[in-house]
Length: 260
Image (cartoon, rainbow, N blue to C red; front, side):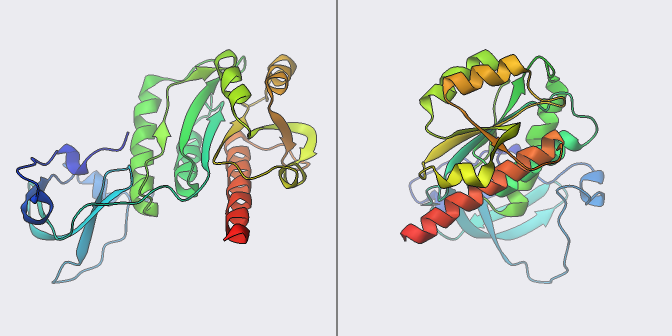
């Protein structure tokens, strides 16, 4: 879930609060938040006059304004426009991936790139070969998503959902007209997409390291999923996730462009 800036919620004093209310937004308390720009950090540029600033709520809401004052405890933000609401523009793609066993920053990279590419949600998928994911990792992934959302300037949050098991995924597959499962020795993904029509939402399903078991794959196929291949090479979980998501996003955008 995206957080408010600094975790502080503004007090709504009247209907015209957007133009008149000063919002107190807290800065980071640790110097390491600024010093390490390897993930989520932004370059800093000096200016005597601060440029206009924007606040977003992760649900398409956007308010423009400017920074009025900064001190050690935070900053004052003054809204200069009314709240505008922007609806989602792309196909709503929901990613299910067995990444619970990924080591180091590989899971971070997966959810970061899913955020940048415009996935609506990412759900850790529990399988026979990826049976769990730690709560500590979930907290970290939510912070990664928030940083990536600000960096790529998306207005609608990508939700990190609770873990789900294969059996609980089957009814979602049955209800979806677009459900793609990355498996070896299947129809190439571009060939599969050419036979499909554009949908408003869809499921992207990626197995864990070692892939799905044959039983798991058969269960998803019987529920209505389409098996697609991502090429002749064995891909890591995060590589397969990004490859399939990017391909479907580009396919969806191309259909939208041709229609308009």
